[in-house]
Image (cartoon, rainbow over all chains, first blue to last red; front, side, top):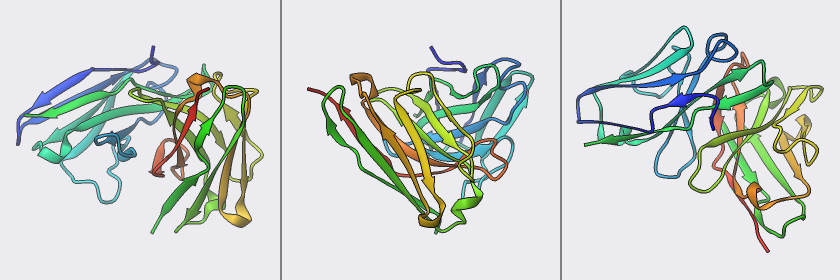
Length: 109
Length: 119
């Protein structure tokens, strides 16, 4: 069982806005930056969001936010190439470990 | 360009050992925390271990503590993971990952090296 909770699956159509969520507690998301990682078709993960900062090269249709112990990744204007598994992660000071969500499979219809 | 290249994966019998390596290029390796993250077949991502830039601070996941040892050679821009007492549930793709400059997330991932533990 993952320390962070993500939706198992989310779907959307091309051009739609979708939001993926990641829920933790005060020991992790409530206290630290959340990273979001995209993994397309069993390739290596790629970082798509660091807190609310967009890494270089990532399309600006991606945005990140956090409220309390829930972080969100929003994709505005969904594209076919956005179909992937998305993982959130952060530090957990009670566990003294980096923790991950179980991942959300995003399907572009 | 910034790059991480892993090597050393393979097939090993239960109880065996393996040493993974990661060679970094395109950035000042000695400035960054470095991390190993793994992914079992069909499963999610799992943090394994990290090491501070100087090598003085290291942490391990409970699942590998006492069996795995992380190390680095800043002169050679390399990170290693010595794995002992391997078990079937250690079977996974192992990724070498750079932490951000603020050490608050991960920003650069290698392509991974596959470790299979099976008799």
